[in-house]
Image 1 (cartoon, rainbow, N blue to C red):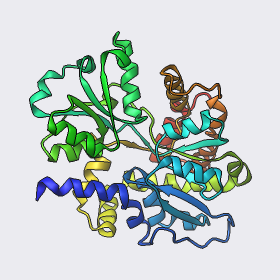
Image 2 (spheres, one colour; image 1 turned 90 degrees about the vertical axis):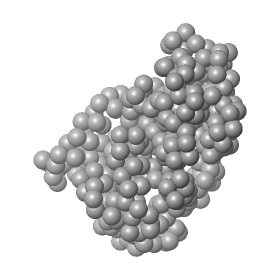
Image 3 (cartoon, rainbow, N blue to C red; image 1 turned 180 degrees about the horizontal axis):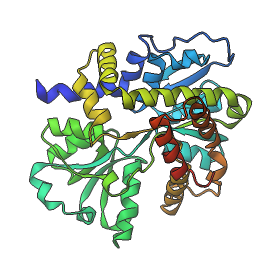
Length: 355
């Protein structure tokens, strides 16, 4: 029973957690609004958008007068293409595909955060002791997902240790984290880079985690919120209101741990300990609506140095942290002594110095 528990829960989290926890509504349902006439269609996929789910479940979007529609996606590239075609407004999934679109001329703007950290290096028990530090990857077969955030952060670390990832490591690309786990169990790989949720699945299946990437690169950015630049310009007040609602959802998630787990568990039919693991444990990713402009710029430059983006686009022109600044400032004007808001403001000021 225990062995299969987190596998089923992970599939649930990736495919249906948000759809199943948005105020008991089905994907595609919308909220009525009198304040804003423009409906925001938001692409979601997985537990990384948990505070967005909480915000909607607590009616924060409705209270702000924002009509929304959630669309489940499995391919961030398709979501970004839909934004360009006017069929979608916001993508919340992945970062590198967004940066890739921007580097190729798409007029998109990153305006908020979703998730940071969350990558881990896993292996089999018999190879666990072979791992001493990141340099242990030299000469090994490492399973990766195409354009994975944790992967490229480890490559920078390796170069700093005098190891050329392209020459000294045999990277093998897979179509899913599940495939990486299967290859590890078959002995076809030495290590695999995966997300924390799948690392927990791997542990249930006998694999072991030997390195949390965030211990080496604290608060490295992953999923961000992105929209068409013209949409933000034409509907700026609505996007600020959206972020205010999300910040309230973040506050609820951080301050009402028991209620949040119970809420998600009741609406999803899954046990509360799953949410304890993927949201609140030490191995969980960092969830935050802060855009973290500086870290996006640093990561974009890292990818350019790795030859991922050959273009000369200035990523600074495609990040607007002022929307979040307005949102948190307005909330603090309403509640000037709120500890969560003040902490989020400090986080914002530390991560958005170039704004």
